[in-house]
Structures are given as C-alpha cells and as structure tokens.
Image (cartoon, rainbow, N blue to C red; front, side):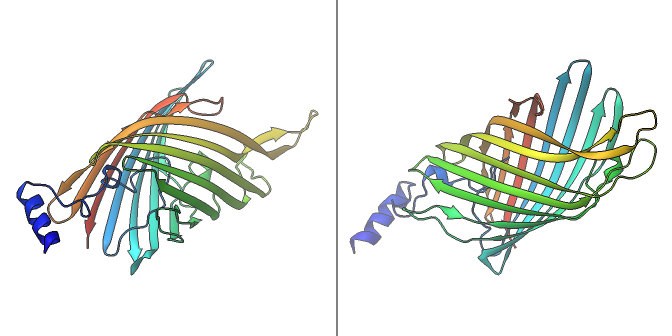
Length: 291
C-alpha cells in the first residue's frame, strides 16, 4: 500500500519515484561523435544520424580545407541483440584553390550486443563492417576495392553523471591500386588501418552533456614513387600516416511527443600530430523514433 501512495505523491509534485527516475547520464546515450558507444538500438527504434566536419590545414605554403558529410541509419534486427547500419559519406575538397567533391566509400555494418551494461561490467558491442568501393579512387575519394573492418566499442557509466567509452578498430583493404601521373596503374598492394580512441562524458543535466573525445589513427595509403636513373620506373609504395586528435564538445536533447528524440551537438577537433588536420568543427544531428 505504501509504494502506490509514494508514487501518487511524487506524481502530484511533478517528480517521478526514485526507482523510475533516470540518472542524468542516461538522458542522452548512443550519441557520441568520433567514438562509438556500445549500445545497440532498442527494438522497433531507428536512428538517423547526420554529421558534417569542417577541417583546415596550413602546412608551409600549402593550404587545404574540406567538408566531410555523412548520413547513417541504425536499425535493430528484431531485438536489441542484433543491429544493422549503413553509412554514406560525401566530401568537398579545396586544396590550393583546386575544388573537387564526390561520394566516398559507403559501408554496411552488423553489430552484436555481446554484453549489456550492469553495475559490475561494461557494455560491449563488437562490429563487423563491409566497406564498398563507391568512391572514385583516381580522385582520392575511395580505395577502389572492397574493405573489411572490425570495431570493438566498450562503454561504462560511472555513477549518476559520468560515462566513459573506448574503441579499438582495424580495417583491411586487399588489392588496392592507384593511377600514376602517366595514366598507367600500379600493382596491387594490401592496406591496413588501425585506431584507438576514448571519450569522457559528463551530464550537466539529463538533456545537456559535455564530452571530450581523443582518437589515434594509423592509416596506409598509396604514394607514387620513381626508381633512380634516367629511365626510372614508376611504382606505388605504402605511405603510413599517424593522426592524433582531441575534440571537446557538447550535446543536448529535445524529447518530443511520440518518443521522438532529437539530439544536436557540436565539437571542435584539434590535430595534435603532423598528419592530423590542424583544426576543425564537427556538427552532429540525430533523430531517433519508433517504427
């Protein structure tokens, strides 16, 4: 008899009972920017994510700017245990007054909710990715070959207001080739990329969160080279770049009727390594609703 009475009194004063109230950190989840959170979509709930990242580089006399756009949808497969997602990127490049734009390599992903979070264990959701050669490799918008990715996101809340997230990823692209300056093509080479990242999220309120993300990425591309001598031969060699980025940001949520949640966000990536983009702005916009 006591529990219903407490519930009625709490509702009368506009406050949910303690056991029904969400912690502030639970008000916005699965809405990080550069880091994946290890939470699959709930059954019959779909998420649409739009991102746009502006980056600027100033190395010596070279100046480049870019806009990298992406659209992602995440769908549960009958339950929260299994999830399907796809992403389609599009880029605008401006390098030394040369402009170009095109679609990049799209990806398909399957994610398994291997562990759900509890008081004494984190959430873990390993992901398999298939990267499709939809971009034009000759113009630098793709690899021209099918690639394969594996990501392990790990997430854990630490009390009422704090959450941490960790990612480890590897991408393998076999038989990649490049077009030389004389119009011929290189021999095939396998490319390997791997990255580590983490984030810290602090919930100011249940609908307003601060976060800082850090990412280290080691990627391979193809570089044109020439053997010595008057009649040197062109050949392709692997060129590895190391990017270290830290990105402070914020996100907030609008909870609307019909279980519709809209989450905008913004962050400011700062490159800490020579190969990383010097600075930029990252815009995030998510719409989540039942279907």
